[in-house]
Length: 276
Image (cartoon, rainbow, N blue to C red; front, side, top):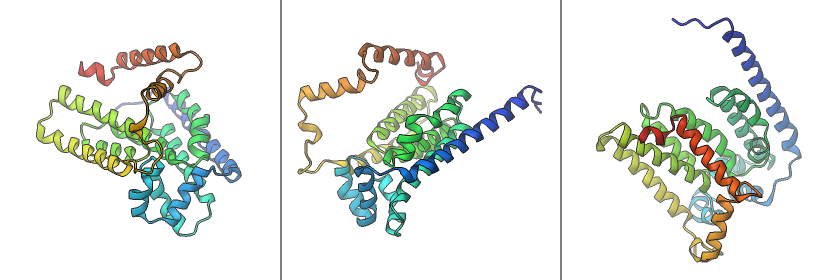
């Protein structure tokens, strides 16, 4: 039986008090600002779709115009159809931010200073909390994915199921889930040497989910500017904005940040270093 040192116990108590204080500040700030926030048109549109459309139409008719899977809209269906006031839209987003903050503060393996600062940052607090869009689901589901990731080899279906849920938040989340699934496949193939009978159902389930998302979001003929009509110049411009202009105004700095991040994860024993 291990006995904690006299230093570690007070330090742990200080952190617990700090984490709880950050969570209380986050809750108080959300409670103060959510009633003052006037929803943008896309926030209100999601609420109106959830209120007026059937679940079938939300998934198979309107999702392709929204450009996002319908997990967010389906979450809003029950309160919207029950006659809840529109304020409930942003209250749900705030509750998700609070849940994500709790998971980050009390379950995340990130350094404590980072865990204390992230919940009160602009994106976490405002963009993913006060503003009610589909990616309000991203923060809690990302932290949940990180939690189940630690035991992904013991409970692979739990991990893949979480990735599938994450992929229905938005297309950006689907890319994240697909990337994590690709890395997981590399691990179980080269590192763990799982037999085909064990990993094939996992891959088949994720592939079927990906096909489902493609079918749900396949652009209709009357959609303005579907992906395949984009010109070569526009494609290059979008890629430039995504990869190089992410650290403005010096594109070369984005490449430097990316290389530093790759080196950091490699030296910390990331998936690629273990596979190689």
